[in-house]
Image 1 (tube, rainbow, N blue to C red):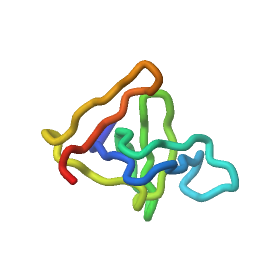
Image 2 (tube, rainbow, N blue to C red):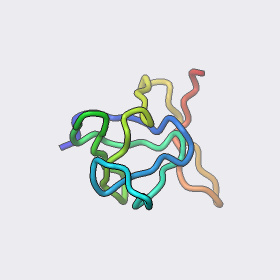
Image 3 (cartoon, helix red, strand yellow):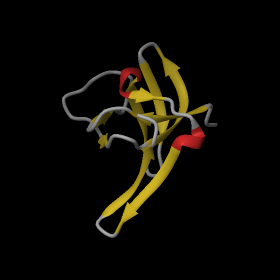
Length: 86
């Protein structure tokens, strides 16, 4: 069950299989991507996205006011969630 919603704060945030850094992340997330929070362990957050589940360092994530988000999409780019505040 998703406990809360967060967004990727920095470009190229690595997603790992376990709550520990490894040489090769299983995936990387773009700045502004939405993630659902499943669990927290220390400095790590287990997240779920549309096509993945994995662990991200908490410092890579941020919360955003829901009314300040907009969706942007083009033919050459996937959906991005844009924070219009700052």
